[in-house]
Image (cartoon, rainbow over the protein chains, first blue to last red):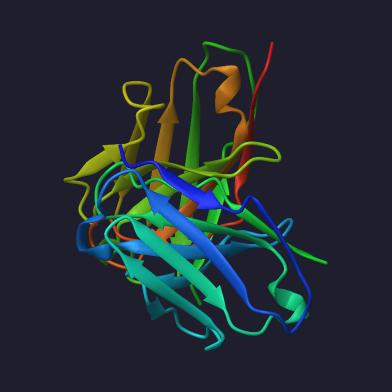
Length: 108
Length: 120
């Protein structure tokens, strides 16, 4: 099983700042099959990016994914008020399709 | 539009069984893999299981392997999760989610979840 470790656990930033969220895998993720999801309280997750760097339909271009091998990153270039939420990475290169433990992005 | 509606949750005693159902609409159900993902109260997401578009391939998290069974009925646009030998740690909100493809990939649509509470 591939274990995903996200850092930091909590990130406190202000609107307009840049957010960098990290996801490290315990072994190489096949075909860079990593997705990032955003979840707000009381809502289901929403996919932001897939296959490391492709943006999902309707996702603003301030969200970008990067990485390879075992290290992956989600960058939010300029935070908007609606971006404060919990973010999860997931690998789907091999079963079981594990999630990271999440990064809570909170308003400073 | 794509809709996924879970049902079947409730309070169940440890060791008992429960069957969750997910009714899908708004897309070609028989072309898509389907997942179950759960979230314990106040905790993160945990992937549970996936079934391929035709039901021929099924994969499970280690934590539920041998206890949970995923299945689908393409004639009824429904995916099921049969949960046996339930434990307190299975208490969670269970989401049904659509895969973007025919086999296991990432999920682009999610239901609102059904709550399972395992307690004596």
